[in-house]
Length: 314
Ligand SMILES: [Zn+2]
Image (cartoon, rainbow, N blue to C red):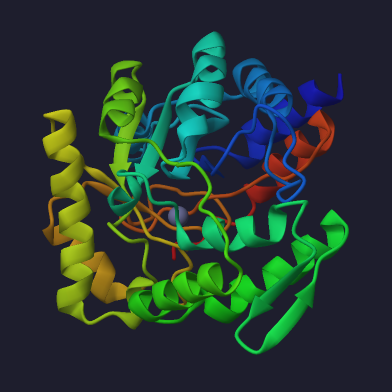
């Protein structure tokens, strides 16, 4: 009953508005270091809710509707960032079960076995048998998962805006200092990306090494953006025309320089991580996205309806 009310509210509030949901991982089992990421069970009810009360569209369909001002009520796209293997093994079967189209944006530099810097850092804090970490000159005591999570978050923030090469050196140094072994690959390799595309999932680009574009020179930005497109096109044998800005905050993580480069590189859309919805007034190269983090269906639905109120173009 309340879902029906929210659906109606969405029809009134959300006329000609496009919601784009952003996910990263879907875990087969709960991950104590990432309690806010959905498990298969949570993702299952979320996708069922989208099927029952929303109009899920592929990104290509949605862009045509945005352009013609013909979006159906409660239009929604599902997207994933980075290219995690569990997008193929856990999320895709659920998407297929409910007939939900999706787009997965891939950082192509992590498709040959190495994990992303943030996951490598998290893993140092995650191993239950490790009781302490030596990071630079600091000794970090590790106990329960809540403590491990907040300490990991602190160090993630310290490293996030460092230049890519410097950050990588730091991570290498931390692994050496602690005699740590690397975690098994978390990201899809080119064959797995192709497999996902063959299941009907749209593949988009997300740079090569996932830098904060804004801190790079225009030439470096150009390389990161166009090389990821070329990698994916050679693996898939077809054009890749959608892009997601790493970290994705307009003004904070990317600016008009990146927007112009993305446009010139031959993409037809690009998504940010600024919350809200898109309308026909929005630039297709600055689409808003939103993460509903709720663990109950009603709150999830209410937050999605509420998110429709932010539709100012970026
Ligand atoms: Zn990302």
